[in-house]
Image (cartoon, rainbow, N blue to C red; front, side, top):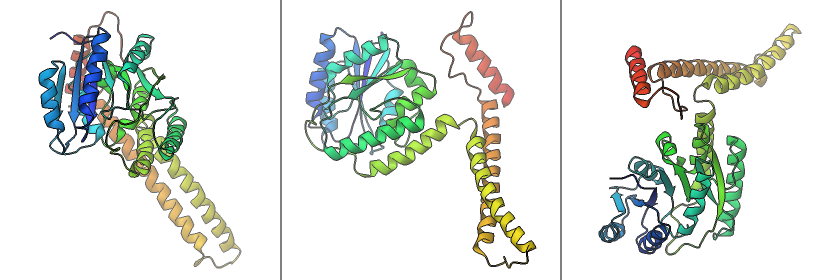
Length: 330
């Protein structure tokens, strides 16, 4: 089968009322654009009639493929399953609630043609509640500051990327919010383009208030994975040094007082100093162990994720070299 121009990947959970309208409009839009395409719907363990709807429409639209999870696994797992199945030269992500306008897909594809590897549809005017809009602004600001990746709408469900990006991203947990950050960490060019945003067709959002504190912890994890994955001692050793300096300062103070014949045995500062030094030593030791694990892992699995072009070296030769390295490390 010839590779389609575009694969549209749609994760869905209990969106049976929305799927017919979304699929109808999407197919009509893509056919009008004269693009060869496929639509892949990953049903994330829906308990409504989503499977029946997908089965019906797969008979109507030859471009539609779908899979169904036995249980709800989360949006990240649904997207990752889709990443392993999509075949298009470009991959578009969109939600199944009808808030994403299929007409905006061409805007994103034009941005890819303009040199980007991944483009996020920035919702300039959002049709959401005030609280959701406000917390989203705070989340996006924090993500940009902590990750160092510029952006104003990281969590937009409407994204387009080259197939190379899909091959390099591995999502789990709730990491779907940080796809642009992971792509940028792999050296891909990421950006945003303004797209329209509509009100949800039917039903309610499946993400509750817990997404806010989960998002914060996920952001810390993403920062560690993208910045300190290959140098964990830099952060753990740095924290250990900070604790050690504070603890050493407290113990020095207590030592000076002891020389002046001041009782220090029951003073809280002594206990705090010992505790800080011990924590510092433990963090530094943990950092060194993490460095050893990274060293052994990279020696056995020396990949080349940043190679996007070569001269006089074909893919088969690169694969052979990697296989030899793995054999030598084994």
